Amino acid sequence: MNSNRKTTTEEEISSSSSKTPYDRKEWRKVLYKLSASGLSYPEKPMIKDLANGKYLSGMLKVSRIFDLGLQERILEVRKHLKDQSIQPLARRIESEYVRLFVADTGGARVKPFGSYYLDGELMGESVKEVTSIYSKSGMVKTEDYQGQPDHISVELEFLFKLTQSSLAEKYEIHAEFYDQLLRPWLGKFKNKVVKEANQGFYSLMVKWVCESLEADRKLVKEINNSNSAGFETS
Image (cartoon, rainbow, N blue to C red; front, side, top):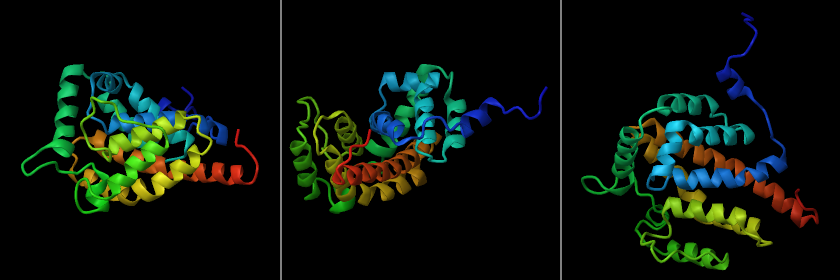
């Protein structure tokens, strides 16, 4: 056996495939889709992808492309979750989500709403700003959604939809929304989740989301600067 040959794990961690601005721009959709689904109530398709390794593989790819440095931890969690039976895994993930974000004695351990951090109360003044930007971007909530518009998963879903938008000013809107209404509380939210989480997945998820969004913000700045100079990023 050749001792110089890298193991599969080493190859996955060190792989540097696709790090050009174009590749990062293309993978923004995946970044935000995974972020939104990972912090939404865990539905069966997401649980299935956790069990078969696809979900964590997507996170791993984004971590490589955006140089997040979380590859080793992602591989550890993927190994732990991969090939587990769907129903037991679903019960663990769902119960942890509920414990953290929905209900416990005295309420959720971690409030997943921007207004809680920005205004010191739920449905505070910042919610008007959130819904205003949603409307300006042509995004409207579906009739069957009864939750708050500033839930972390809704805000991330908005940013995902923005990656698919044909609006010429979508990157400016992204920067405005992230800088004013998401970034100011995201770090506090992450710290609370890391402190309270019993399952490795949610601790990893919030770290990955924070690192991914900060890395993407740098890319958005590059794109906006390029566009303002009269160039278009391919």
